[in-house]
Length: 271
Length: 271
DNA sequence: AAGTGGTCTAGACCACTAA
DNA sequence: TAGTGGTCTAGACCACTTT
Image (cartoon, rainbow over all chains, first blue to last red; front, side, top):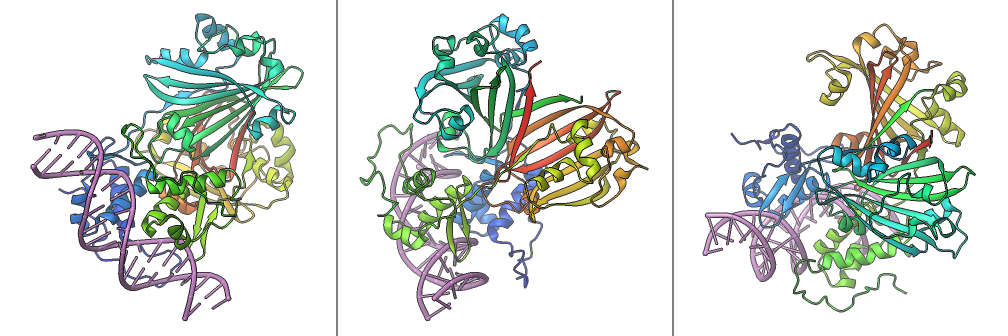
């Protein structure tokens, strides 16, 4: 049985109300495939009919078929492999606890064992974590300058990290420090370093409070490359402003988490 | 001066390494426009050249121009208005404090004033909040059933909400309650109701703890309609599992927040 | 009436993969 | 070598908005 039977074999009636614009051929094809994917009739990883076959099925030109498939790709439902075919997309999200990893309590358990909270958690799941770190002194992005209250023209220290699980990039984490906070401390060290208690403590600042700002958006082209993102992958931008006990913003971290690989988890206990 | 001068006037050299696939005409056009948008040369709200003009500029066919513009639309950088033109997309995000709105402390301040935390916050910003609520008894979505530990076949009570600011939808919030928790309580009331202390308290359950799971993704077609989303709008799915003092999961809330209208903010104080 | 975007077709050439 | 997706062109018709 063909899983692609259209539920509307009749050509769509021209609608007098153009409020809901009449369904196009592209919409109908995408709609049929979408329905079958969401219903599980086309399971994750399954191969879709070729463009040729879909064209015959719907008596549509190749351009139309490709537009329908592109629609689904942008919805994150389909990936295409050049020269091979189109496939139902699979998701492998990993949980990530941004409020927990930095708490002093968890630090005690994991950091002394020679790994940060994230890496320890990945290991606990039987996966292999890896980090690529670059350190540089740069002009801060405008938002960072604002949150750190950087005087205009002044530079900041940045640690740019890509974190990988089993060899595939899972997220980026770029930290920004005022120069007076970072210089002469282990923060300036390149490479994947682990300091018991964390980098902030090593720099003589206790991070007493932080504010997280999370927003979903489409990735920039740079992020698409850095994280090897397929079409239709939304990311969460997770911006953390860390304050020391004097109430000064001493660090901004911007993490970019692709939705196909990450779930952000917060646990909150009522007062 | 034309803001659209290509930075690579020379036709791209055919690259021998196909690792980084050679830049296509579409990429070049999209790249030029993207650069000007991100640099602010094309400001938010600005009108782009028409497809006709771009075609002449780049000596490309209309299909190619449209593909470039579609690329940018899917990145959330451009919106097109039929019969009018293409425009640089504008963003108007509103801050949203999921950990604060439900805390007993804020409840005291705002709920007694006749509004929930979200609505009160919107009013404080001089905007007009509005809620559309439907109540129904339904079969729970699989994930909800899992978190609520609903016996298979059993139904749950759902409150489906759309929250609007100044008339435009800002997010959806669908709550799910086990029937024994909801029935005979104000939870079953349709419409925009406000109970001092919150609905959970009115049902005799103190929400002692909750777990938030946030993940970015592309919206479903239903969400595109419900929230009136333009192309290229990512959403954050914010799932909250609420536990009572006995440790039982008594509510699941699924909120869908479009990234062009929302920033999720958490404030965390170190122990 | 002119301009603009929305949709569709038919045909072409390319690069890559698999039999 | 045949099949598959990736890119591009040229032309057509439509609906809508503005002049």
